Image (cartoon, rainbow, N blue to C red; front, side, top):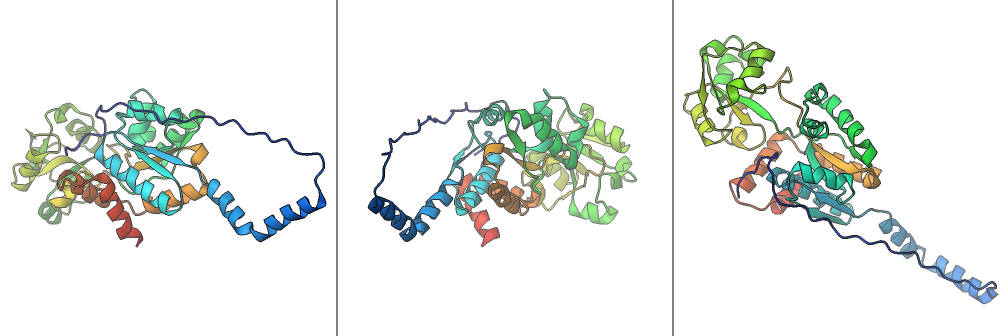
Length: 329
């Protein structure tokens, strides 16, 4: 199974079928005998529990969770489905529907009810690709997303702790030796360090160009590698570069014991995983269930789950189920 970029194009969306059911009308007799009335009252008294249980069950909405053809989103969709089913909701998962250009219109039209997305990237998509300042911080990105989606009957719930964005990583030994924790902390050392990244990094506002403009960093040199792939990992491990661009949640940082430096000046967007949800199913019960599990979904956690899928070839649904069981008992 290959690890697919969250921006990739993919399979076409197949909308779920739904049909309207006309309400049935019953003609009632004008007069009801006393015996009949007593019988009906007795039935209500004798079996209130079953009636109440039926009402309670029907009060929970049926939920369809959809996602793009990005393995990470398939994992998250199944995590949410598992906890919602445990809470008594009827849930269907529709993974790999295609690109965001397919999935977002699907939730706007009510063809799906929930989709996992990334706060800053979603905001840019909703504004025709424009990168807005609101996307720099999760505290402003979510309200901006909510405003853009409101007219479609869609909103965004609080973010998980899982961040999927570009990060600049160093080895644990380098971090310890030079006391590196943030990108800003690189400033005294950058002149002696080689930066590694994809070929377009030197002219990319989110890579070397941004590091120069936002952080004032000038490196000794740049080495052209791949995009957060095996060449980048190997170059950092063997010392060809001292800083390299990777993805925060694809597992390379965790599995190689690298240190991802904190983006303290918000060069990258606040791409935390967020639940995008139709207001029709955004009940207090649903929100409580999702908020509870999202509080446990960290960048390290999703990184390890991604590795299970991409490196160990496990299925997203199985990986999600095992993780939910491990954190909820």
